[in-house]
Length: 380
Ligand SMILES: *Cc1c(COP(=O)(O)O)cnc(C)c1O
Image (cartoon, rainbow, N blue to C red; front, side):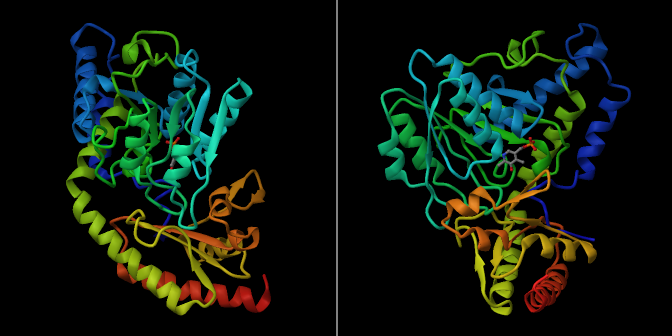
């Protein structure tokens, strides 16, 4: 099998599983209990916050564990909207956000929020001038993703943060695709809230965190016990937290090497596809993109057909189009780049990890050449 869908999820690293095991077996204590078995768990949770805070230039009590990226995005937007209602009801985001942000914004609009969805240019970068112009006296939050999950484009986060800070507006970034892959410093980038998810950087699924800067007035997301300083009740997922911490350590240890390796393979893959498969377009920014992301559109080809034929050859990839309960809508991200729905339906996303090899890439390119040619000949 050749796995090229690392933006969807990544393989749980062996050292992550190893770190988790004791907390699934002998260290089963509730982190809220006062006896030793419980305090072992509590210490592990505190250590994990210290590790994560250290990577971001944050403080441990600014890290809140959640069940993943979707929850972190929901919490950030809903809680800021609620806590800052007296200041205003206007939120600025972009048209290419993940649905965890976009659908939450739509929900908040039903609650009375007013949301501006920023355009992006043909490479997927938000327009900073349009951002400045969109700011109103009642704007309470700017939420722009760090890097896009479909096309890999990395936003000018520092510039966005500076604009937000200069107007005294909170800045949230969905960094689910970036955290653990690119260095991030919340202070440098003026980030007030940041979402991340363990399974996007070789950690376990169902665990993530939300960084909430201490100056942010934040509301509880889950009411109940005193876990997470009373803001997110529920017995801590200690094994998940410890696993994510191990994944963080691993990610930062290998980051430089991994980035270099992936970017080289990515460039090689893009070059070969563009050279050897005619009428193909590269989606996303040519340079400002995640090291492991390739997204291309083949003219006169259905992305879904390519995926099925790749799957028959044991190659895991993804189409640019979101496949929600069988309805094949073209991707909102590709449409926002100004692409026609037809071309958007012909897109393919290949996302690499440090485990992929040049041999695998060669196999994938050869298969793709045949698949695209066959589809174009037979129109299947
Ligand atoms: C995967 C992803 C999410 C959702 O994260 P989960 O942990 O799967 O809930 C949110 N935003 C982006 C950009 C993602 O890639």
